[in-house]
Structures are given as C-alpha cells and as structure tokens.
Image (cartoon, rainbow, N blue to C red; front, side):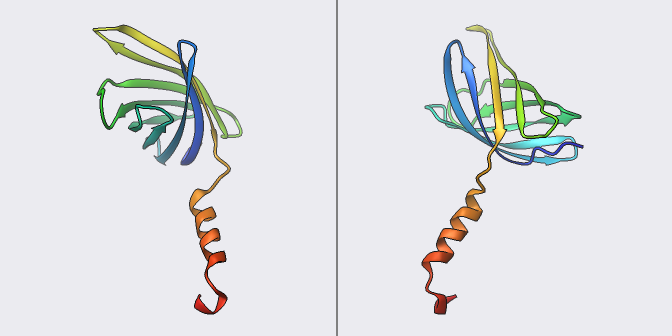
Length: 127
C-alpha cells in the first residue's frame, strides 16, 4: 500500500495564476488527513480524504475565510514521490472553479534540520 505521510511541496493553478503550498499528510490505512499552508492570502487549510492504490482524493477547507469545500483528486507516481491531478470548487454564486495541481515529497526534514542546528550551537560540556 502506498504511504504519502510526510511533507510535500506543491503548486496549484487557477486560471493562469499559480500558488505554491506546503502540505503535511498523515495516512492511516486508506484514510488521509493533514494540513496545507498556501503561500498566499488564503493561508492554512485542513484536509481529509482517502488514498486507494495510487488514487488520491481529499477535501480542503480553509481555517479562516471561505468554508467552501475544494475537492482534489490525483494520482501518485510509482516511486511515491510525485502527485498530480485536478481540483474543483462548486459554488452557486460563482459557478464552478477548477484547475490543475501537483506536489512532490519534500527532501527537507525541517525538524531534523532544526535539531541538528541547535545541537551545533550547544557547547559540548552542556549536552
């Protein structure tokens, strides 16, 4: 079974504008949850969904502001390091918005990097 738990860096496109994001996914069996932080004014969102085989589906809802459900679907690459797919929002006021998205696993373990930097700043006799 594929496991997408961890940090991912990605981009989604709306019209011709792109927005970068960082996602942290937690997978338990087929269930998927996590947090996405957009590099823009929309900010943090919670996600919940599922992964079956290499197919991923989740719903994203921003913590502040719009509570519209944004539906993401995608396919995980065979090496489990890249996801690409489509997103859509159905809204009675604006019709339907949609676009493409993609993400790749982040090679950066930010906590490990922080711990490593902190350990280098502590004098040896103080450890």
